[in-house]
Amino acid sequence: MNDQLNFLQTTLHSEIPLTRQMGIRVADYSGSELFVHADLAPNINIHGTAFGGSLYSICAAACWGLLHLKLMEQQVAAQIVLAEGEIKYRRPVREDILVRCSLPDSESYDRFIYRARQDRKAAITLDAEILAGNRQAVVFKGHFSSAG
Amino acid sequence: MNDQLNFLQTTLHSEIPLTRQMGIRVADYSGSELFVHADLAPNINIHGTAFGGSLYSICAAACWGLLHLKLMEQQVAAQIVLAEGEIKYRRPVREDILVRCSLPDSESYDRFIYRARQDRKAAITLDAEILAGNRQAVVFKGHFSSAG
Image (cartoon, rainbow over all chains, first blue to last red; front, side, top):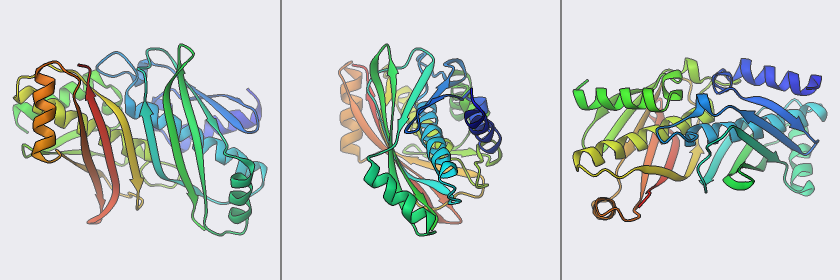
């Protein structure tokens, strides 16, 4: 893992301690997508599958992490918070959890960065998904905003 | 705490271990509302407020717990899962977390119990909210279904 991803994982574990309890690990980063991993064991539920709250939390942490990386790259100091979240559980997750979180289209992303850089209120929506056996198991949408 | 709530808390902690890490405690139950409490400390985020993933998870666990109690009371053996969730964060939560989860109108509830008792696919939506300083901080909607 490179320094940037190592730094993000350390930030997550120290600043959101529950992410350490959940075994969240930053796995990969392409510049526009962030992959975050978590073991099933600490996130299990009564059915022996992943707890819906954990799946939501991992998606939320991954999307926050992706925005955090982008803002650091752009040298924008804005603080971002999750304003709304929606999640659909299409299939149970019976294995270790891998989230893929993606930036939106470049127009939405550029507008977000432009406004955040000016310390104006800025909003952005990120999508995440979790696969189980190569099929989509979870779809997440997170609406983030900067304080402005 | 009475035996019923003690049993629910033990069930949550043993069957969804993350609820123990989050310090979730069943606080009160009126027959149609369940109150669930959690300390801020294990659920804190980078801003010194409650992590959005924790707030979602506490709402989801509370709503699941309320349905679990109702199904036990009605002696219905159906297994319920969270199918979809939506959450809005209106204000940061800077204090210990108290969730109030409520059953829907009696027509929706009765239909859910009626179908679940017959082992048919049954769906129900529960609302939850978290207050901060007597003002609504979080609004949650959980769509649950029984396997059928």
